Image 1 (cartoon, rainbow over the protein chains, first blue to last red):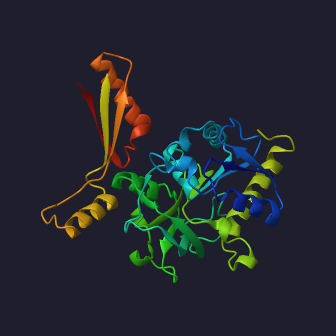
Image 2: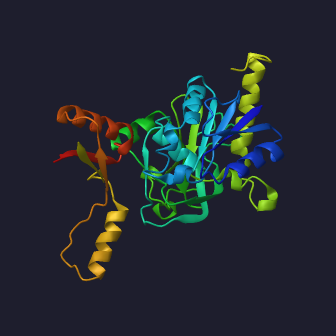
Image 3: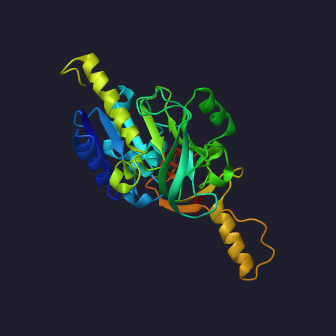
Amino acid sequence: MKCGVVVFPGSNCDHDVYHVLKHVLEQEVAFLWHEDDTVKGCDLVVLPGGFAYGDYLRAGALAALSPVVGAVRRHAEAGGLVLGICNGFQVLLEAALLPGAMRKNRDRRFHCRDVYLKVERDDLPFTRRLRTGQVLRLPIAHGEGNYEDSSAALDRLEAARQVVFRYVSPAGEADDAWNWNGAARAIAGIANERGNVVGMMPHPERASEAVLGNTDGLAVFASAVESGARTLAMSGAGGRR
Amino acid sequence: MKARVTVYPRREILDPQGKAIRNALERVGFAGVEDVRAGKSFEIRLGTDDPAAADRELKQMCERLLANTVVEDYSVEILP
């Protein structure tokens, strides 16, 4: 499967994602520059963490208007897989490829630490290798991960089962003390209605190899690769967009 | 024509920055500050001299880029 990693000026997790896809999962990977107006035939596009365009104006706001995000939008509309991690999630929100917005963390601090996530659904292209109810330990590193939307919009999100990951205690229980950024309804990751676009604040690419002491994140990428491979198999060789 | 666009976090949403500034003001002796909302201000110079057209365009700018209306409100003011 061909994977693309978007690089904005200010991206800083691009090489980590590239490494996981290329060397751990042995996939074909290309970098997609912010000025590219195509995703170069990639089946999976990852928007990595960092500070795209310096996070000027709002995190992700200027990146959302870049040519490559236009191409990512067309890719998503065609059913292609898109994963936004941390700043990449913020970009997807600003681009309205996912609903809601990010505010500064509730306690005004930048949090860099391991958190615990409950998997809310395992029927998405990005979660098929996980189990609903499973608890993952993944690192976060952000100052603006405080997910917000109107209560009506949050209700719609829940009703449509678009919440993918939620912050929980190590035992997997709802616990506000383990919701480090204060996100509404402890939301750590969401999907679009179709399920082919997912955004998450934690960093699975930083927890995808035993040598790093944690492999909980690998299943997110492995799920996407498996989903992409199945789609390719069903559409036949050369059936790629 | 000059204009000022002001963007604030919406009233019903917690503003951690404003809260931190309020606390700091209190720390340096301003005891009477009940609330601070921290926002952004943009001074924009436009080629048009039609205030109605300018107002319309500035509001479009806010909706499209300057504000994130999920969490922010904006106001537009044409400057003399």
